[in-house]
Amino acid sequence: MKKQRPVNLDLTTISMPPTAKASILHRVTGVAMFFALTFVIWAWSESLSSAEGFELVKSLMTGFIAKFIAWGTVTVLAYHIIGGFRHMIQDMGYWEDLESGNSSAIAALALWVILAILAGVWIWS
Image (cartoon, rainbow, N blue to C red; front, side, top):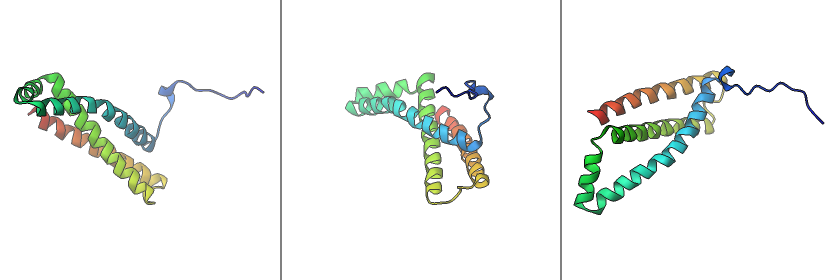
């Protein structure tokens, strides 16, 4: 039994609402945090192992790549927390209709951009 229905595999032609973007970004940041934690755990372990290990991590954290990784880790953590609070509020029965859901998604994304900029200023200053 073969069904004849249209298939659109070009994702660039699909316009997703803010709620979809916020939800997908929440999942992506969860996966990114999993991988970012390998750097965090290694740096924490190395810095606590000895005074030399602490100096090694301290010297590595002055480089651009390490600062970029730290900024990325703080940024994905910030969005994941913001998105998590948004989902918890929705689980309590608020912001479930289309208008307030879109507004909360836009607010979460805007707050995340502001926090990402502030984290960049904090890390690179």
